[in-house]
Image (cartoon, rainbow, N blue to C red; front, side):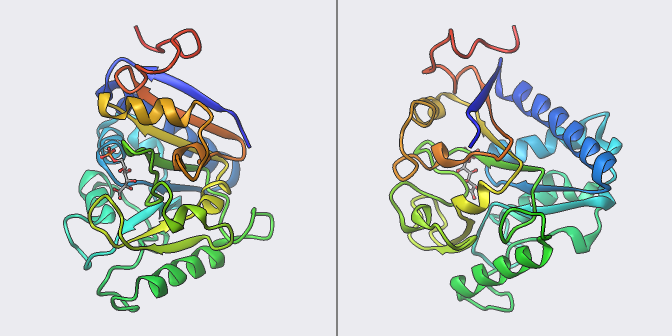
Length: 260
Ligand SMILES: O=C(O)[C@H](O)[C@@H](O)[C@H](O)[C@H](O)COP(=O)(O)O
């Protein structure tokens, strides 16, 4: 697994804008090289902030939105259209403003979807959808995501993998149902660490002083059961995109601010 690379930006707005520019370039390069691109979105303020910055970017339409596969790293298990669902917030932040191919937008099931309120069946259905999209050259039962985005919780959770809970211990399945999540709502669907680690690149987003402790713990050698963010590594690249407040606990000589 790749050692984490850290880029520190002056503030969370600049972090979101720079991450959006970085993501546009990554998608454009993937589409030029392979004809399409595959990105896993994350929920939360930083994930949605990146999407909003991408939508406002002058380079936005360098992306061929019709050849982009979108997946989610996790989802709140709520009814279709609920304001708290990550896909609802992603649509508001960006997706409704660009010409995506609906068949390539892979939202996680809602609690009033075909599996009804059975979150484990919903997780299995999403795992099956991922497996159908995987190709022989991919690593495991998921497509080779070009970029997998993750917000980082103040407790070091990523996706809906919370410290010490069963989901972070999963080593076989790619997608699991989560109950009793400390961050509401309690019932969620999440990719597991093996699925996250199948991505070519994993980008972790953290801004604000409330994340400084989690960032320091995750980058200081903590185990993935106690600090799930520490286990979120890409096959080719692991990139932490921070603002100065979230990087405050890191040794400055190792992670000098990228922006003045
Ligand atoms: O469904 C969710 O809540 C997210 O996927 C979650 O993993 C989020 O990314 C982190 O909690 C960070 O959220 P903030 O960026 O809002 O701090």
